[in-house]
Structures are given as structure tokens and as C-alpha cells.
Length: 92
Image 1 (spheres, rainbow, N blue to C red):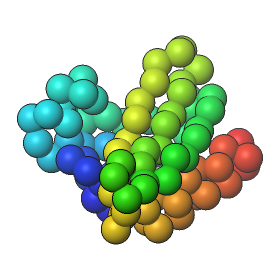
Image 2 (image 1 turned 60 degrees about the horizontal axis):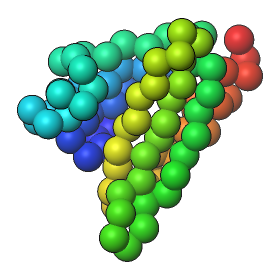
Image 3 (image 1 turned 45 degrees about the vertical axis):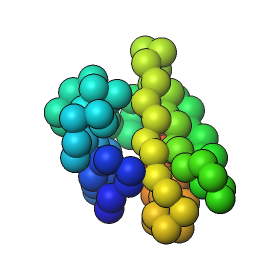
């Protein structure tokens, strides 16, 4: 699935985020981010509005944080991803 400047894939255990432009690469800090569901301590979802984008925020057990941006058209897909991540976390 695509977010704003990112491509995201989740297979039920591993979340892979790849930036699709230079700005996103700089914000993410890498050209490919792979996160195990067991490494995620907190998740939150903030929906996109008329004038602002939404974001899926991830906090890791080591304290690092990542924000995955999306726009209004991508909001439904990211809401489904959020639910899938929460479900996977509850099963570990």
C-alpha cells in the first residue's frame, strides 16, 4: 500500500516501509525500514482532515518513533493496517 511518500507492506509479522522520494527517505532515516511486530510497543492513528494529512505513529520498545504519513484517499487503507497491527500485537 502507498502512503504519502512511502510504500508499506505488512505480512502479519513484519512491517516494511520504503520511502518513495528523497524527503521521505530523510524523514525515515533509511531507504528501507523493517520492523517486527514484537518490537512495537505503541501504535496510534490520527486521521487525515481537509487541510492536513493523517499519520500512523509507531513507538518501539527501544524508544525510537516512526510516523507513516497518508492522505485522505489513503485513510481507509491505513485504518485497516492499524487494525491489522493491533490484532497482530495482541496475538504475541
